[in-house]
Length: 432
Image (cartoon, rainbow, N blue to C red; front, top):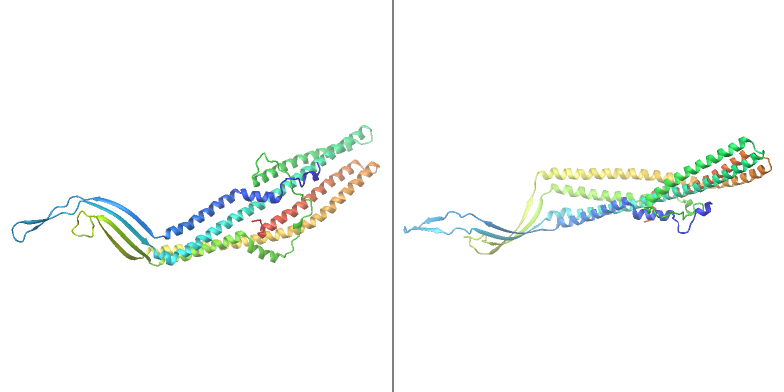
């Protein structure tokens, strides 16, 4: 099998395909998606908690009979007994509490903070999908490298077998020494070992790729990208400083840090308001039998109502508010420090990928020259060996050098694409 038969197959998988599939099927991204939904629920919870609290209730109470109340008659003609209160009481009531403090001091901040948390969760989900896509692209190129190495090592084994057969014939005719035959057998054994190792590497790389893109076991993976063709992404025209600025404005992780920091800043402000008294308005309406506000009480349905304001404050609110505010401040400082670490790591990733891309371009050119030289050397050595001017060992060494040169060329082209994937991800240029 030739390399041309493996690369660029119609309907085959490309790095872009692998990235999209990994982003869509990422398990970790599904976890982050649930966090987005949870953040949305927290936003709704803020609204529901701030609504006036309406409470409806109905009660029935049975009282024990009270002793009769008897007043003496001032005329001396007897006494007067006052009827006792009803023994059964029924009350249907509705009460409404309006948390004015929540409206004036906390609700707007809480809504904005919940919105920031929701945005941060959504950005984290997008960043997770982008990371999964980048990881799948890298796994794809590892698989392609292993696949091509397998083809080349199989070609080398075929060459070694052919050379061994040729040397055996020469040895039988007395034209080749025993040492040449043993050397040919050693080259064949070494080539067979290399094929076995390549099989193992290919199997591991394919499993890693299947896991990244969640490919079913029955799906046959084929290489849809010609990694040896000219690559438009080999050049990066911007300077490192420009790339740093681009990344700081594009990286989703940094945007998520900023949103989380904003949410904690709002939480800090909310907690400080707990030091202040709490103002609430209330209203009650009841329809009762008997009416507790009527005297004397009789078995009669009647309604009554009340309206008022309450201002409450507890010394413990000082401790609660201060510790809550300090906790929010500490969490925000931690988040800002994590952002700083992320920026430092991002800059290292950008610099590493930037220089790796430049080095890979040089390596491709060098590897192409080496491969051409190895092919020419093999052709020349073959002609010399046919003329009896070169040994069999020299010919086998030339064949080995040609295989190694092709492996170097594949590695250089793969490294170029890998560096581009790493740089694009470090810059936040991932597909949205």
